[in-house]
Image (cartoon, rainbow, N blue to C red; front, side, top):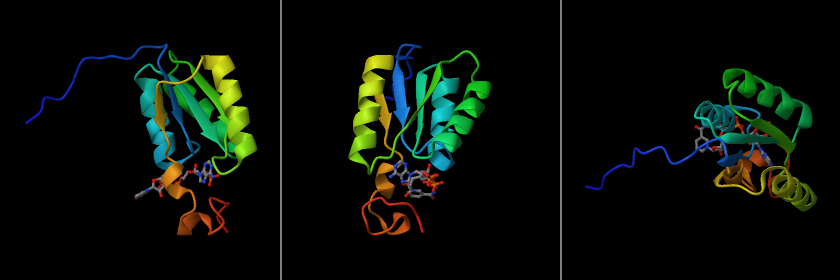
Length: 118
Ligand SMILES: NC(=O)c1ccc[n+]([C@@H]2O[C@H](COP(=O)([O-])OP(=O)(O)OC[C@H]3O[C@@H](n4cnc5c(N)ncnc54)[C@H](OP(=O)(O)O)[C@@H]3O)[C@@H](O)[C@H]2O)c1
């Protein structure tokens, strides 16, 4: 049986990005990462909902750096804009939780490859 690593390897310079983190599992994952002290990037395809979620997470983890940027993983222009912003703002990322990924192109998001739910 393998050992589970318990040493804390991250710090405030460790950047974690969570896609679809304005609600649900993505929101909770982002909140926990921020509470653990990582720089946490909240992303959402809806800017207003994403900013609201980021504010809630920042309130739950006041010592941590919580950032927000719009990101629709099904929109190449949005992905490019996000990548450029992330590189400039945070120098890249260490942790990616592609929470919205399983949703991309599935029945719950429409058959058009990650379009909004109807
Ligand atoms: N909950 C479960 O029991 C369960 C079980 C197995 C797998 N999963 C998978 O786990 C993931 C999260 O589940 P959940 O229950 O937390 O779902 P949820 O509450 O519906 O949240 C999904 C999140 O993904 C976002 N999203 C959807 N398409 C996107 C896109 N193209 N680009 C960026 N963000 C996008 C949604 O944004 P909007 O608010 O704009 O829609 C929302 O923030 C899903 O992929 C789901 O399929 C969930």
